[in-house]
Image 1: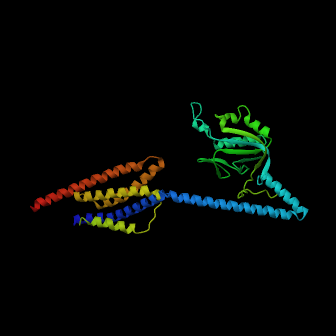
Image 2: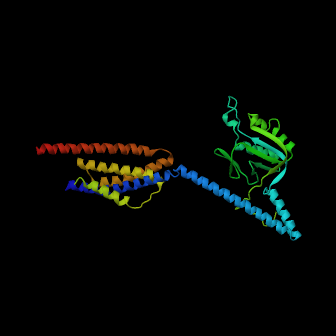
Image 3: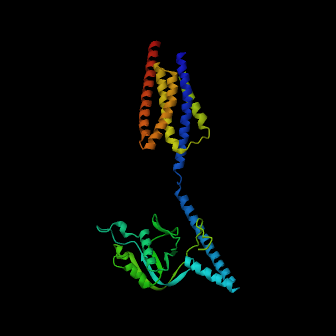
Length: 239
Length: 119
């Protein structure tokens, strides 16, 4: 009888142990499922391709609607002079916000990775163009009085972020790849002079081939896309 | 009667495995450590029973406390950055192996003895 009693107790415990085993097995399986989320590379490629296509379609749509708006504005302007004045002001504001194409004299500079090999003096990391290089150039150009700037046709506005994202640089959340072409409208001589200042930004590159600057009499800079404001609100009283 | 614990084990396993139970995945490692502690107590109990030293209250309290303590200690270790999980696995795993080998030894001895007696 004594012999039976310990077997009974162990049997009761073994039921609980079996439950424990089942729970931990199930949990481990669940962990396994959670850990391998993106498995199918081909599927991912298809998803990216589709999304890109959709993106392009939507962009086209935006452009079309933008054109319609401009047409409506023109139509409205044909009416009263008050409306025409308002529309002129609207265009002016849009231009200042970088939402219209800008043209004028300026410089076009091209930044590309150095074709040279790293040596004892130059580390490989110094031979490629980084997001910080582009930021520095833009900062220098704005300081020299550039009035409109774009990088690979992405307009740089007050809402633009310039950041490194893996292999490419993102501006306005749009991925760009080298070579980077920075267009800036302003006094061409002043702009180039600011960049070529001794010990200036151009001098900071180990390979002079990485930067080429051209002065142009006429360049056009594409507009930025309209951004939405979710948090910031204008002050009620105006100023 | 020796097969009863095994039946219980399978019954308990199936009772839970067929249910749809979800445990947060961060608890997975603690849960498996608790299970290992349970296994240790289980085999320890069998060994004690075979040795004739089985005490029901010690066994049951040991089972419950070990399971909770192992998981809690591993959790505490994670909080203070010491890998107590590994320590518990080594100790408990070692004990499981020791108990299993002793159980095997007792059973074999018993089998040999009963054979001799039968002769």
